[in-house]
Structure formats: structure tokens, C-alpha cells
Length: 118
Image (cartoon, rainbow, N blue to C red; front, side, top):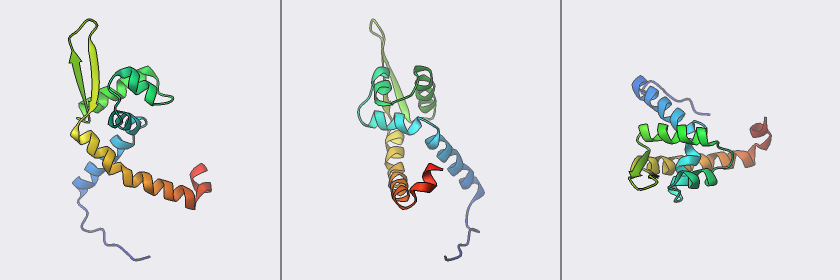
């Protein structure tokens, strides 16, 4: 394996990268963004699209993703109030950027199935 020089890595950018990876990798966030990218808009549609997530956790994650600018919350003042959640441009970009990681994981699972089940 070729030695790599890491002297060019900027510490601030490294911290920003770490924050981005932790946000994207937080449990359920990718599933929520993917459900939105596939057309979920109402809370119940998100819940039906994501196996195993509780209402409380879905609500908390939607709020977090909204604060991070990855999901847009729209409130229509009807009776009853209608709330919809849509991925923002940044949210859709994040899903697109995560796709190569999905492919990498799939390839890794084929090569080393015992390492991933440990």
C-alpha cells in the first residue's frame, strides 16, 4: 500500500467533516431523508416508510433535520392543521452524496460477510 501524506489536511475542515458524517450517520436520519426523497410528505407516510421507528423518535429527528436545513416543514392552516415535510435541496444532495457509500458497503458485505456480522 502506498504511503499517503496527510500534511495538507485542514483541521477545521476535518471537524466540519466529522460533524457532517455524524449528522448523516445518526440513526434514522438517512432513512428519513430517503423516505422524503421517495415522496413521503405527511408524518404518517414517513412512519409507514421506515420500519421500526417510533413516533417520538421520528418527530425528534424531523425537527433536528429541519433545524439543520435538510428538511422543510410546511404548515397549512386548515382544520385540522396540515403539516408536511419535504427534503430541501441540501437534503436531496446529501442522499445523492451518500449513494457511493451505500455501494461501498454493499461491495464490502460481499467481500467480507463475517466482518460485517461481528
